[in-house]
Length: 266
Image (cartoon, rainbow, N blue to C red):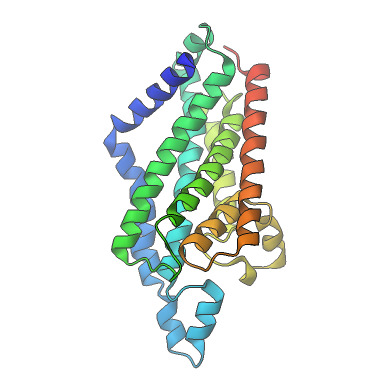
């Protein structure tokens, strides 16, 4: 545990001692919310057509698109933060730090878990800031919303972040070139974002995209957030979301640990 906590502390120090990196990470989702979310005012368009507002409410479950998109931005932040968590292993290998760690008694699983949990902490902190900004910009919550619902939101975000960060770290374990790792994550991040319900409901998408969305963890994390913030909670659907996210987190964290035992080397 001493090696694990030391490695987590190192990762977090690299983060909070460079506030410009935190700012740059937050600017993109804030721009999406402030510009795209507000400018793409589907609620005004729906109100200009007969019966359009009712159809809009039925489709998105909220009276304005901004609120729908703001919840999706939580998944957006987690996806791109966890993506960079995997990149840090590549840089540690290139800069020689990984070789030094592997020559100490610190277990290889601690190396992987420290990357995962430091990324989870950063992701949740940034998600909290995004929620605060969304409230300032006009996030409209459901009539059933309670402050305790936020605990459920962050529980879902925690599981999704553990799974995603484990997946990206798993991909990066054998990478020696940052160009290769960037090519892989860039190939994955946009399909994962757009083949989900983060920006639009999957029910209006083609059948083949809906099939992909059924296996996309972002869809389940976003759905949990939407139910707890925007909609009335469907207990069965919410339970299914947490079961999927729990299995996803447990599966990929286990695979990451097993691969670190087998392949993580100097």
